[in-house]
Image (cartoon, rainbow, N blue to C red; front, side, top):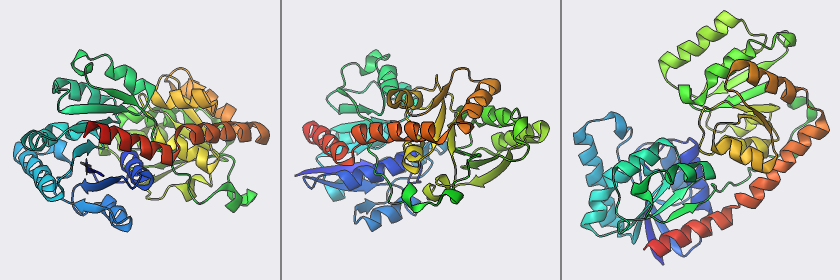
Length: 363
């Protein structure tokens, strides 16, 4: 049996952490895992519910903290390794590579790193990792894989492309009566930060004057105060016909998705877009920027949504009109295409077995 110590530097329940939970649910019994993460975070309760051993020695928000905190986090990783005695260290997000490296070097442990955001590719390349220490990189999409291959510092590290596993939720459309899904309700799920493109969406909503207050857009997520204020000002100036609701963070987003008809992913860059999988699961049609990377990649591959080709409000507004005007048969076709692609490419058991094999080979 291989023992893998998972390093999770955040402990929130955004896409990366939810993907980790799905992975833990799909791992075979031949892999024993423990998770080193910050204490008193939402993830910890989910790990406890799954009876996963938790070593709460990491430090939350390390990228905003001092060198002293980074040293403390590195010591926490070493402590976790000494207690669990892993054969391999798995980084759920490779941003924790530098902090994990001292413990891996002292104890001569191999590392496998999951790259889930584009920015982490350049970060990892700057570390000039040795293939003796970093035994594998997992890219969550072809778009991320292409970005990795741009850096010669990473060319000798074994590279795997693997879409995240996804477990379809227990709630399905069969639980919904037709009256509960609101045809003109649009939802956007994600952190409220400039890279996610919510400003483009708010401006697009201001162009849909023909809906005369019959439409509604829900923004789900927290973010940077300055950017959130900018979004509110754009809405105030544009006086959109769509009613806008700012819901903040929502722990279980599926019941909310089940009341909507369209999910908008207006990100400038999106390495995968787990929320698109959630949209298909809940029966929504995704609208995605064609230049976003992974999100556009999976919608195109699945033929499971609508792409808009210029990252500007008028282009997105046109795509929204198309999505909201879909007849039921066409809407069902998009959703079924997406679900079929998801079942083929995101099967949880296959995903867990593949990650297990990568970790065991590294060890």
